[in-house]
Image (tube, rainbow, N blue to C red):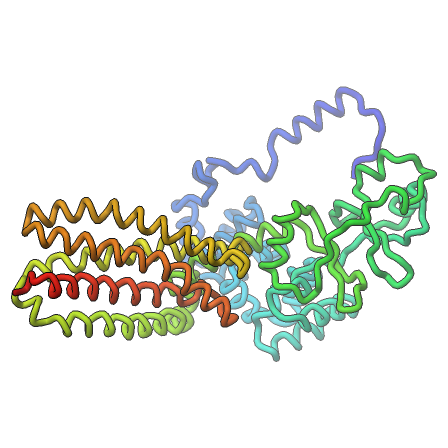
Length: 481
């Protein structure tokens, strides 16, 4: 921390010169490209040095990197090379590097290290990062590492691990600036100077009562601009957002977004202050949840390129099998109209178009609905309105596409064929619009993640309805004789 005072010009110039080259100025240097990614030739150089067993060369190449770049390098090399690399740069494997590592890579590397080494890294981390480091390890490995921690860290980690995954209790920071409500602003400033743990960033001071319940907050700018004699109870903000310790991380992120929070107090079941969530935690959660939902919609599981083959296989194959079952339903409908298709080959040519366009329309609506459910924009109170709105959008889309395909089919085959495919297209896109909303809602009502399997069932509905509407109308209209 820089002490307040007057600095002469030479000091300022020297400071400025030092600031001209900072560790973060890494764009388009000999190791980074213009998008701040490690250059392939640099990575090849590190791998060649590893292959030659030249640990000194490896260290010299890696030492200038920022911790986040070292984490990237560990993820870019082969799994067999990671242990060699970590061994060559032991003292560079800081807590900052470990915190930046991909979950799967970190888990493998932590399992390869001795418990004492992992405990040393965990001691340097914030509690939430230390928990993230340990939570995916085997229970025996967890216990061995926790046993090596300092008593204070050990208690904090064990307390955090007692909460369910992806809850505020797991993610919160336990470094909280809290003071009793009887203080004045001057008392608070003196306390912060003499006793405050200013090594940890904080945006506001929480004011608590005798039972350790948060009763208000004081932003730092209020503290610095308020006379010393004013009581905290006269200047503090009493209306604050409290986060239950068991609240899911996605709900926490929504609260930060809805109320434009920078930080918020986390309270236990009795309302006592136990930690805080800050906006930097929320940025990570939002990114993680957004990527997770997108991957779940595709049935790709974690969708992590570093995910072990066995886990990637098991997470993806079950949805492919489910998709196979739904495809059989659509095939059964085609088989039912097999005789009609044999009489008029044009039906076989055109029916995939109806199913494909319906599937795309359903996917569009489903993506909107899943996001709306995740952000609490689609709830029980507005379900009917959203359904009616999406049906009207679907009818407009269906009408537009139906006119285009109807004219093309009429010119290529017959006017009646144009009418049949246009009608089938409107029906299927309308059904797709309804299914895109209703299927995620059904999963949500069943307390299942709407993003997990909605796509499989929406696809089944649009394919089946597309084939049934088109072939059924063709038979009913007499096209097949």
